[in-house]
Image 1 (cartoon, rainbow, N blue to C red):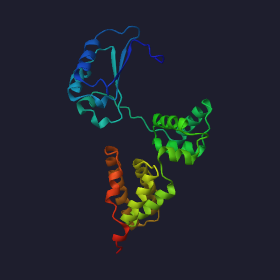
Image 2 (cartoon, one colour; image 1 turned 180 degrees about the horizontal axis):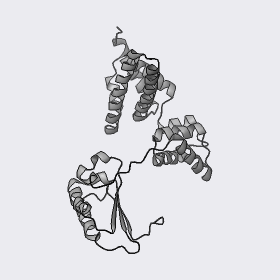
Image 3 (cartoon, one colour; image 1 turned 30 degrees about the vertical axis):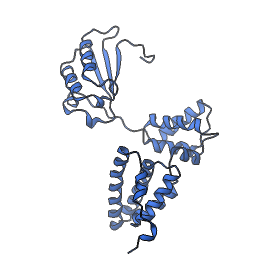
Image 4 (spheres, one colour; image 1 turned 135 degrees about the vertical axis):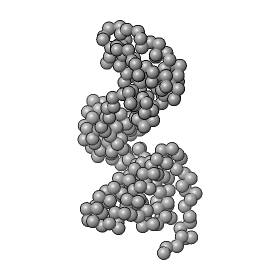
Length: 263
């Protein structure tokens, strides 16, 4: 199985084999006996990408599977799996990796590849990956050929399009203060410097959460309500940014500073 030559282990990429014809072909072959072991294992990766007709066709096999067949449906978006399919499966939810686990793995890879990476840069990669080991390794893989030498924190932040936390803190101050023009000007400067809007939103969310925890600890209800509202808006914005990757239209909505009055 590790070598990828096991006849009884069949992996299907639902992102590129998502139609009913592929599922019909699968249904015809599941009745064949295993070549070596007691079971045939079908792994359907990115299962949520299957079309509705494909799911309906698969459902019949899931309802009455042959005794020698095991199906493993893998997905990063379980809510897109029909309830009729979920109801016939055992669900195993994998937890996100901790930052310490990701940093440890990145350090192991860097040592094996003779790549020098600043510990703070590794921590930045771990935070950016948000618990995904695959994403973290992918980010490191992107940084290595782009960096001209050892990967520093500033270098990693620049290459990944992540703004300086101090700049994000200033931006959040403008947002909380209701200073729309200043906030948009700051955002446009971050964008012009190569900052990725999605990373900016994530950074603002992290800063807002930290301030909300501090406000709740101090029992400052006024600040807590304000921060909670801003955090809700940022959560909505995060979803919007994922759907609309081009942030430049934001620049058009920034009014000239001299036309904005303060109350």
